[in-house]
Amino acid sequence: MNDDIRLAFAHPSERAAASSTAPHDRISLRDYVVEVEIGAFQQERGTLQRVRFNVVVEVLPLSGPIDDDVDRILSYDKVTEAIGAELEAERINLLETLAARVAERILLEPQAERVFVRIEKLDRGPFSLGVEIVRSRDGVDLAGQEHVEAPHPRVLFLSNAAIASPHLAGWIDQLAEMDAPLIICVGAAEVAAPQAGNALAQRRIDLLAIEQNAWTLAARDRRCMVVGTRTELDWAMKNNQICIWAPSKIVLDAVDGPSASPRDALALVAWFAAELQAKELIVIGDTASDSTVPARSLSAAEATLT
Image 1 (cartoon, one colour):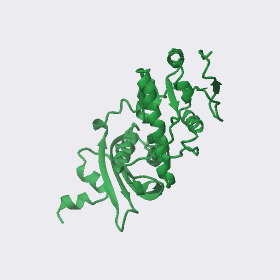
Image 2 (cartoon, one colour; image 1 turned 180 degrees about the vertical axis):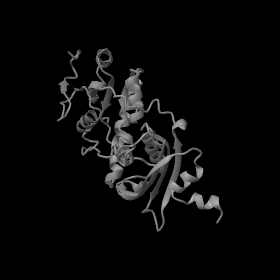
Image 3 (cartoon, rainbow, N blue to C red; image 1 turned 60 degrees about the horizontal axis):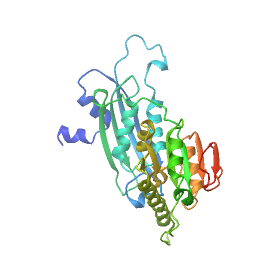
Image 4 (cartoon, helix red, strand yellow; image 1 turned 135 degrees about the vertical axis):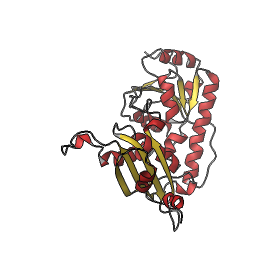
C-alpha cells in the first residue's frame, strides 16, 4: 500500500502530522461515540443510531510556561461541547453538514488553527460509513460566527376567521410598527386534509395543510414571506421582514420536538413561540393555549390591537 492510500485511511492525527507545514501542538478526541437521530433517508427518522467522532485540533505552541493552567490551553471539553451543541441545535440530515458545523465551532476557539473531523455511522451495515473534512482558520469565514443574540419576535396566530377579516391589513400595519419582528402563524384551512393510516404520514400531511394556508395568507399581503427554516427566520427578523411560518422543517428537525399534534395549531404555535423566546404571543380569533411566553387573545371582530 503506497503512502497516499495508507494516509487516506489513517487516523486524523497521523494525517495532520503528515500534512503539517508549520510546527503545531495537537489535541485529539478518539472514538467518541454518541447515539443520535441523523440521516436523510426516511428509515433513519425516529430512530437512534451510533455515530463515532475522531477529531484532531492543531494549535500553535504556547509561548512561555504553561504553569499547569487550564485556561492557557484548548480544553478537550471544548471539542465534545462543540459536538454536543451542534447535535442539540437541530436534526441534521448529512454527516458533511455536521462535520462542517463542528469544525467551524471549534475554530471559534482562539487557540485552534486547523481541525480534522472524521464522523462515521456505525449501524448502517456490517461496516462504517463516514466523512472526513479538514478546515483551517484562514479558510473559514469566522466573522459571522460569533454569537449574536437573536431578536425576540412577536408571534401572531390568526384563526381562519381572522385571515378572512377585513381588519387583516390593519392588524399587520399595527404590528409592523411595534417594537419587535413579526412572525405570523396559522392553522390548517377549513378544508379537510387527506387521511392516512400511518401516524408519521398523517403528521406530515397535517403540517403541509398548515403550509397551504400560510401560502394562501401570503397571497393576500405581499409584505409577508413564507419561511420554513431557522436560518431564514433569523435573517428575516434581523432585516424587518414579516414572516409567515411554514412549520414542517422546524418541527420535524427539532431535537426536542413539540408534543402537540399539528391539528392542535395553537399548541404547536405556543411551542414555537417558546422556542424563539418570543416577546409576546397574540392570538386573534381564538383563545391562547398554555404558553411559557406572555400571551393575549383578541376577537376577530376587533379592529385594533390595543
